[in-house]
Length: 218
Image (cartoon, rainbow, N blue to C red; front, side):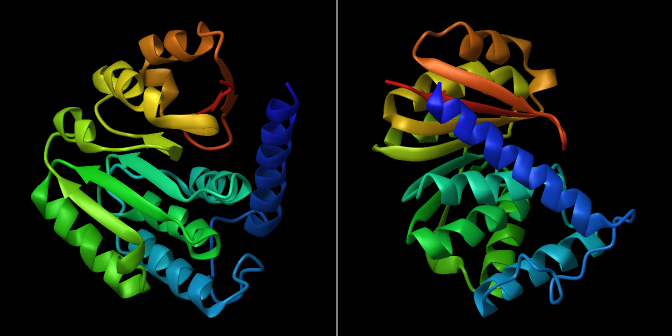
């Protein structure tokens, strides 16, 4: 239960920061944002801003959820992060904001070659290509090659496949690690799976587009 309160506190912090930064608008200037503490962060945030302005965020998370990914990943000092559904790399860059500090690495899976190529370019532009491995192909098959321990797993792909991804990733996630899932309102079977397992504790962060935050207790 203590871990759950910590996660809730982090998500409340994200909500407060997001609200104060928006100031009643959706404008975002990465170079003046109080979130950007280092040159590396400024570079990543600049690429994220450019992606949003040029509509290169196909099927990606909204900013509020991106901030949640960043803070949660940094909070657990993640060394190995796995993402199912790279798209154009928007959510992966939010992970990289944390991984620059934790010294971790992201393995992200994408089935579409064009989107994977665009994501690689975005990672290069942000100077984080050394922090990310992009695996192309069907993640339902490719995740079998993963080795644990995983600190954070993020599922944001075919909604009907969420339960399969969960079943394959969960044994690799360390106790105290997190399983995150996007658009949970579109994956009721997944929600049932993470809320009916006594080894898991789940809360839902609805500031963005519905993020399930699951703690693996043991």
